[in-house]
Image 1 (cartoon, helix red, strand yellow):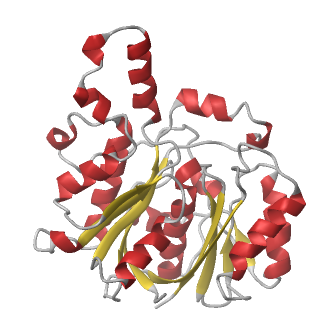
Image 2 (image 1 turned 30 degrees about the horizontal axis):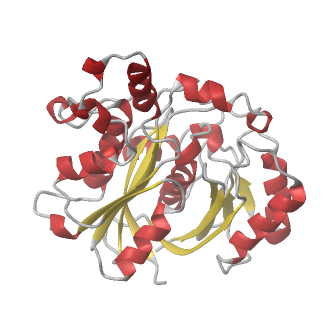
Length: 342
């Protein structure tokens, strides 16, 4: 597969809600204080009239995509037939879905309208992004897997010139409370997060970096929901990492989120990449569940352009040429990508 290029970043998180804020975050030192609320606090950039009937989940996706489109220089003159939209999520519109189900159980037919139901389905976010932006290219909603690798496959096959690809995960108290009942999730701090990238097959003057190779393997169950042995996890991690085709990335962005899984991944990756520096983006973003991998990708792209790690007093004595990024989705897949400077 040929590499693809990341030309724009859209992000909404507890610590940055635009590409500019993400870039500014790289200049913060270790004294920078993160707010601890689960919901992200962001100022809308999409006109409220266009989001009037949208759920919180759909608004989050549409707002993040709009930021990615602007940063990636998608304009009214762009060929909308050649712009695709690929979004992944772990839980979709969990809050709207729960509220709709409650209204059905309680026998409240006035709340069970088709308009309300439309906001409960996971792919409602893709539809709204396409409606707002006028995008008419290939579009897909993934419930797990690597949206960036899938976007690369579509771009390489000529099915699109540009793809908005990313992941969205809305913070919902009932969902978070349920997840935190699992012993495997103990130690993490769950937050809201969405990250969408503008990706193309050709390098431009706006390019952050290139995505060179990808890897993936499956645990069968998400390690944050079901605790697994170190032996089982090491086999899956090693299988995915070997697909990257490198033994010496300058930095590895890990999944570390405060759970038991941190030490397992760290030990495994240290055997494979003994000379690399390890960094955990989740100390910035929190555990954003189904969007964690793409949040890591977004930060890595910004780091490669800026040549600086956030919240780090350590001055790197070498240029950062490549970053290996890892992630776990809620379907139990271990994902990784190798990003390189251009």
